[in-house]
Length: 108
Image (cartoon, rainbow, N blue to C red; front, side, top):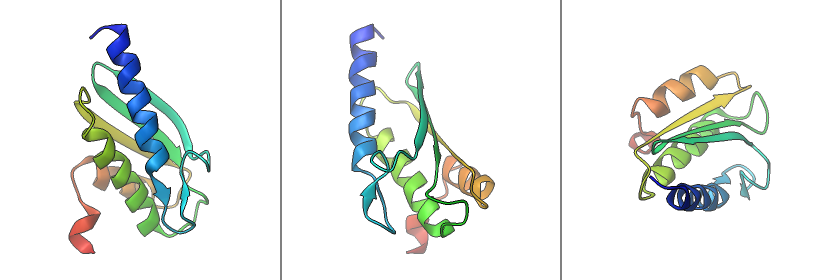
């Protein structure tokens, strides 16, 4: 993968992240500065983020994390996406379920 395609994927990733909103307040996670780090290596993407508060409703944390994973996986050139939520009382559960293929849409 050459530098221009890596850059292209990076731009697309940030475009997609900008579209994801916190369902509780309907503001982009990028505007809220919830994304702490994005790593892209060989088509694998890791997004580290925190939620608006350590005790925000877990269902919103699941939704945000699942949206990140689903949206980024649709980008051409992205092989896999790992989402890591930190500083939340349910972070471990959210990370495990989102990254191991559990879908919140099953329970809507």
